[in-house]
Image (cartoon, rainbow, N blue to C red; front, side, top):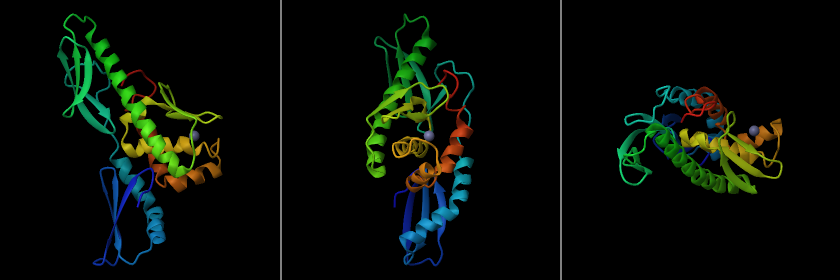
Length: 235
Ligand SMILES: [Zn+2]
């Protein structure tokens, strides 16, 4: 079964008389008796949503070091996981993810090294964000049954995304520092605005249908916005 906002894996077993729920990383694992209907499973998820929400909140990101200097050894977030930065000397300037490291290569002669690494890192994040957010939007738009006019990314100071009245979606690239389930929520949030261009009860009913865990995701974002660098120009 697929739900949105968080991923759910349902296992049916003949050996159990009652249901059990556990959280493993980004995944909610539910084991239910074989005979339980899909509707009952859905009811169960709704019923346990406050617990799921609390669990996800407990595994919120831990703040990384406050002031980044863009030097080797620092940790940077990508999709909810932390990666070490390695700054190397080399002829050609580049940045890539290699075996769990973010590796920036800077020429010897570069004097303002940390500014240069910051520039490269931001470019890398923006390219990942562009690709990832377009993929997620394509996939989730089919499920919501909408068709955005365009998808782009931007550096917003105080929002995660926006949906214009003519159907253009724009995301803050920083959202890809957050785990997948949170990125999915932001995408679904904007896609549902193509059905309702407001935050009315009707709007939230669309969100609820496609992302039953939306409250936990919204709370998570409020809780972690500083960790994600919102409101400043640091990554
Ligand atoms: Zn909104």
